[in-house]
Length: 110
Image (cartoon, rainbow, N blue to C red):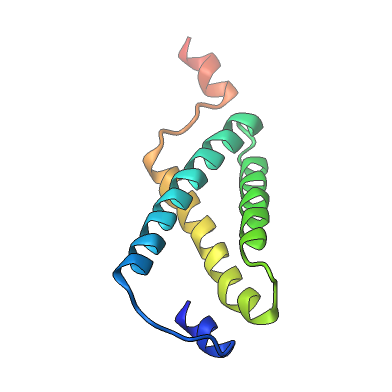
């Protein structure tokens, strides 16, 4: 954030209120991303690639809206972070949640 402000000639500074705002907005964004991920997996069912694609597209739409006015500097700084966040979130969620049984596993279990 400081780098963007410096690159655009805006005054930079530090405040407890500003830092707390960033932390709280980050927590809210994380909660929203979790809800979006759960919704996308419910909509896509066992087709995880579709769920991941839907999750990524929704997050990208939200991120691009938040980066307005859009310029090359913001895209260059935030899109790699956006991509890394989505991949790490997906991998951590996959580790934490139990595997969904496939059709053949369900048939053999009965």
